[in-house]
Image 1 (cartoon, one colour):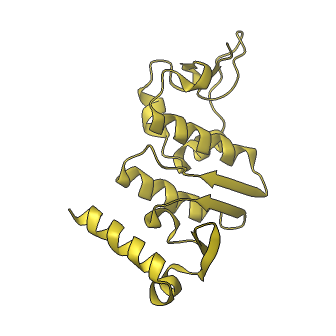
Image 2: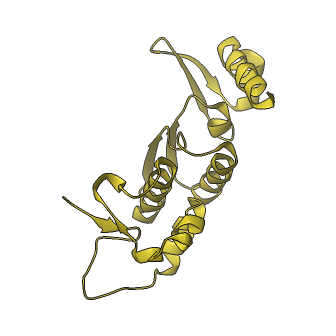
Length: 157
């Protein structure tokens, strides 16, 4: 099976330190903490499909790698589903700040993940049921407002 390190595909003759871009991508993805805790740090062996990492760690490594690829368009589907709410808030805030000059499509059922977006599309039964900012949709879209209220109540419990 294929394997790599937390940083890149392995070269058996080198154990490089990460460059500034790699460290910054890991910081944005909130991955620095657990990479530093790994026995081999940046050169930790990661098995095929991310074995040896938790679901949240795999997601954060994937986010960091996507940032390093520096695409013009980045599509993130349920990008923070396996991380806790506090980490999710940090990652999302970092992504919006770092990728503000890029086209980023974030697909999520969590309003907290998308509420900072320039434009939010509400999809209901396969159709666009609303488009706007978080504030606009709260004021004009019943579906969006109901989801927001339900999720806000769940967070308070």
